[in-house]
Image 1 (cartoon, rainbow, N blue to C red):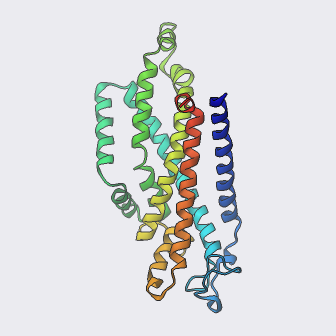
Image 2: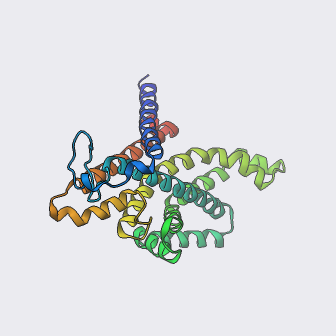
Image 3: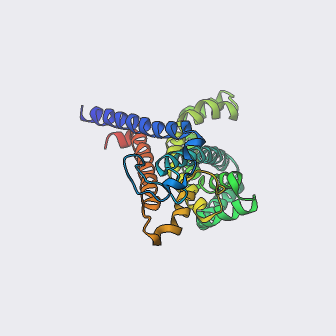
Amino acid sequence: MKRMNRRTGAVCLAAVLAAVLCTVYACGILIPEEAVTGSFLNAGCPPCLEHPFGTDALGRDLFLRTLKGLSVSMTVGLAASAVSAVIAVLVGIAAATGSKLMDGAVNWLIDLVMGVPHTILIILISFVLGRGLRGLLAGIAATHWCSLARLIRSEVLQLRSQQYVAVSRRLGKSGGWILRHHLLPHLAPQLFVGLILMFPHAILHEASISFLGFGLPPEQSAIGIILSESMRYLSAGMWWPAVLPGLTLVMIVLLVDKTGDSLRMIFDPYSAQE
């Protein structure tokens, strides 16, 4: 009964956190561009009831900009994580089912990508592709698949040794049939949880690369750009453009990470019985 209660609590927690994240995302998407236009009459206003996060140097409401920036970051993070998860599955399956040469080449590539700091590699890829959204997506997707690929490879190697897979081979089933009916159903939970756990890393990298000027364009409402703009006014005592959006970003990342941990407990029977 205790184990059932713990899993039920994990399900409820994951549902609540997912609802909060979806609400934040929907609010950011629904905010019109006219709502974040500047007004020099309200420039540099500290946090108040009318502007909970205050306004920036151009008079733009920072609370609305933060919500829109979070929706942009979540969109970029989700898209990049999805592409990265697909790459991880393809590479992991290829390494586990291919020849020893293929397995060695994949492991060498994983070691190479993981040996370079992600931020530097994302900046290089983004710079080569002309910066902007395309370069940012490509950079994040190309650097976050390694850990999940290793997990997928180990899972496939373990599944290939199971009796039911050997029976399917003796019955004349093709490799594609075994992949669809035996391997992919077992890999789906790992893939889903891995995607969720990659999500907060992708959000943080999007914000950091945009902060450094190699990501989204300056006119885009994004957390990294808001934080980059706020650095100019810290010495003048305007702390709220840096502190409040930054804390909101950290809270969202922690919520996503906690959601991933809850989902892992739901899907993993060993974690559910701890």
